[in-house]
Each structure stands twice: as structure tokens, then as C-alpha cells.
Length: 104
Image (cartoon, rainbow, N blue to C red; front, side, top):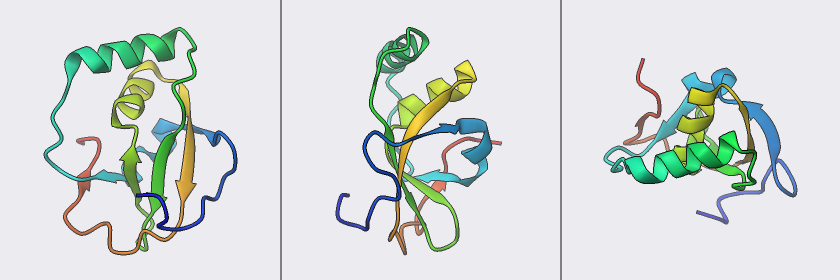
């Protein structure tokens, strides 16, 4: 999904609180949950490993489309920790067919 627009952060992204953006996160439906992978990601975050930034794109309506990093976002939310994120621009139209990442 690169090339949609310019990144608003450089390098490794910026630290964000998942709780502060949770209500704006959207993703494509139907992605399969992989419990084993999720547990590995959660363990890595808990141990302070650098798993790289999540990749988000800001949509026209202010939502944040999750391109890469669903497992990291879910694990960081569960652990109550901040996560590095790169937030790009230029994702107009991506909100069509998406669903909230976190269920209310």
C-alpha cells in the first residue's frame, strides 16, 4: 500500500497510545485470527522487542486505516502500552468496505 501518500512521520514512526486512537481504527473485514502469532507478538512487545511500527493511513473522514500491524495493535491495547506508528496521508476512499478494528 506504499505510495498512497507521504508519511507524516519519518524513520521508525512515533509512539502512540492505542487507547487514544482505538475508536478511529478501521480495517478490511475477514482477516483470520492467528492465535499463535498473536501470542508471539504479545510476548515480543512485553519483552520490549522492536517489532517495527504499525502502518496506518489517514482517510478523508478522519479514520485510520490499518495497513500493517493488526496483531501489534491488539497486543499493545491488551498490554496497555504505547506502540510506534507511521501514519500516512492520501487514503481517500479506503473507508469503503471497512469495519472497526476493535469491537465495542
